[in-house]
Length: 405
Image (cartoon, rainbow, N blue to C red):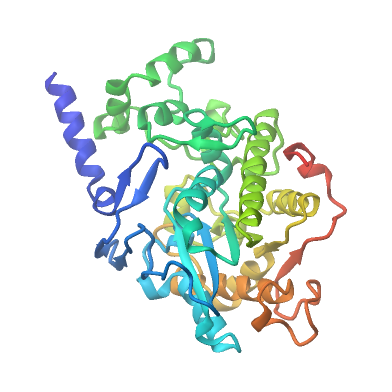
């Protein structure tokens, strides 16, 4: 009993920062606390009455306003950045400096640790009343793993789209705690992993000292034979690996992205998918302490597989995809660092480049009338270095063939 109390106290202390501005929910797993104002991770952090990291927006939407909703996770929310430095704020500033002027509004609908299964619910229940004219989804390289885990705790409708994703930390941790027992006893390991007291013990400082970090580094993954296992290897999709488990997980994410696209269209909005790289996909050295904390050594993950899968998904479902991989690789070398030293998130420069890349893609696809290129809406006349945009069928269908229509 005393041990469990001690473990609970240690867990509460560990979650203190998160609990300041995040609350667990039954419908939407977790949300930013409405009307929050404070300092989080050294940065000014404020939310509005809808629990969005942004100012208040008029409802109904005033005439003459073109409103863009940007859905995403902590990279969109702007972890470690002041409110004005986040990617959506920088995108709005860039648009307003063009002929768009004050008639353009960009809504920061990013929430840390969200993924497409939650982007869908967030758009449906929180963002839809703002009546966006354009919905942007910023796809993160952890989204596939998070969708796979959360599908196990979600209620789905007849089309396989989420009705609710209640917060259930116990069942989520049960799926990702690395096994301790030999392969022949992994069934017992799975049953133990579902016990709350076992999880607290594994996550405690004593458990970490005895059995190592909860997330295995590359050596630990190799020694355990778990490289590419999406439960324990969150960056499996960024490796040049293809397994049945990864294909099934991509199929789930593809379904949720299509659902978001269809929902946006039902709201009268256009839809665009943006995909951006993590530091280990950009260079062998970006974010030194961040990659150490993520268990990734000093080498480049050169695979373009996830980007091609998403481009193929867009081509088959008639929505544009803005691929920022080449832009980040090019600009890290000349303008870096684009990623924080201590974690994978963007520096101020990185967030501004993120906004620059999305701005260029929106122009090239003709998605914002006031920011069209001088040559019209030609999506493939790339005028900014390193941007890749495509909404037409592409030659590399095979990597994404497993994620549906």
